Amino acid sequence: MQLSRIVRTAADILYPFILIFGLYIVIHGHLTPGGGFQGGAVIATGSVLLLVAFRYSELTGDLRKGWMKIFESGGLLLFIGTALAALLVGGVFFFNWLANTGSLFGIPVAFGPNPGEIYTAGVIPVMNLAVGIEVWGGLSLIVMYMMGDLEEGGERS
Image (tube, rainbow, N blue to C red):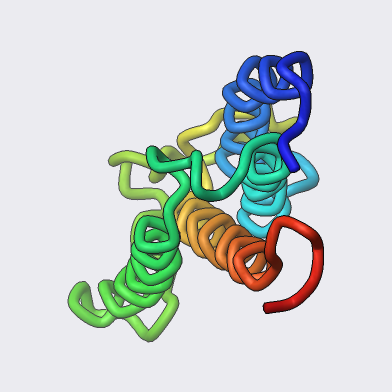
């Protein structure tokens, strides 16, 4: 079964906005409620929207099982790699080695109310990004495998 042209057009229009909102939640996770898991779930919801509006066989571009496996593995490797990088700079596993260094994500937080500087928190934004990529790939894969197990009539093969 294929949904109407109106639903497919609406899905095409909404998808970039859902991706941007999910990335906003991931990137601002150390400043606001949210973070990697919540943002990854929002991004995966955009993928599910496309999977519902179109047939999986029609989605030959961005949403493929192979790409989602790469995203899931890449997010995990980025997470573990960031934690292991602390050992290379003389810290312990998961040490916040970027905090207060003056580099990217290492700007010290001023005393008083936080003005919402995005470049603070050290490795926490990097970890949020890694978790967001992991959750996006994992949840999208789960839905793809669930939808791939059904035929067009809704019965299991």
